[in-house]
Amino acid sequence: MLRYSLKRLLSLGISLVVASLVIFAVIEVAPGDPARFMLGINAQPDTVAALRAELGLDVPKVQRYLAWVGGMLSGDFGISYTYRVPVGQMIADRMWVSLPLALMALTLSTVIALPVGLYAANRRGGRGDMAVMGLTQLGIAVPNFWFAMILVVIFAINLRWFSAGGFPGWDAGLLVGLKALTLPAVALALPQAAILSRVMRSALIDILSEDFMRTARAKGLTRQQALWRHGLRNALIPVLTIMGLQFSFLLAGAIIIEQVFFLPGLGRLVFQSISQRDLIVVESVVMLLVFAVIVVNFAVDLAYVAVDPRLRTQL
Image (cartoon, rainbow, N blue to C red; front, side, top):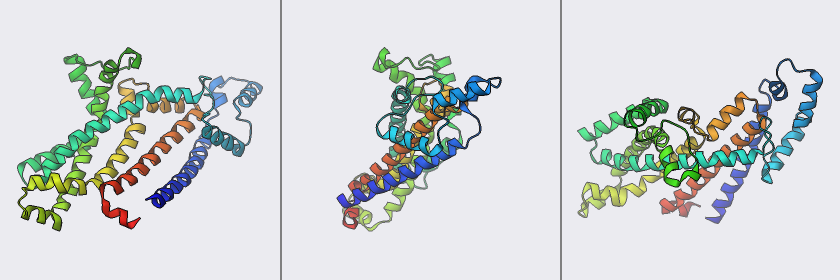
């Protein structure tokens, strides 16, 4: 187990180095000069040059890359070109919105998907299974921002149970903050629950044909009991994979939902920084999200071993 973990950590480190090179190269070759964007098209060349020197944009790209990576390793993400505040502070402020939102959405999707997938697998080919598959197909096909607008119309405008957008901050109270994130979390969770429930159903159906499931049925367990006691754990490996990918998507891919609900999260920060050519913010946030994706995948790999003891003998 230790050897396996060390190999995965080495792979994680290599992935981060490659990702940092790709992110820096892609963003640096993007058209547009941040200094000229900040000063306007009528700015004098000497003024632009002075601002470029102040922002550190006049040094060689290799030196800038090394300074950027070295700063991140020490916890210094640099200073925002636009707002002139530490990028780390901006990320920390937005993370307190995006991370709870992602966790809420992932929890909701899991709570919905696992019993729905079990129900569909237990009634394979029946009306219940067909109904679940139809609803999940609809959930996959409909964009999450459409769900978001429907939720706003129903629960914010008509019923007035929730606000239509904005985030009051955690200083207003835990329940107030969670209530503000409820509709965005549901809008993010429904499409992901549809995907996860279909994966759960397919994995369980494959497990039903295994010898140990037939043995469990021969010992007197009902189909549902065999699914809960023996099938669920063995079907979790593909489900864990999807959950890991979903968490990464929910953390990094909620830009549209954050725009719909006016949430000051990481997705909206990236969107604003791209439009303002605030390269240091874009690079740092994207690198942080890549790090989160790689760490989550590493945790999922370790969870495989915990879920399936057979894998321990192969390490």
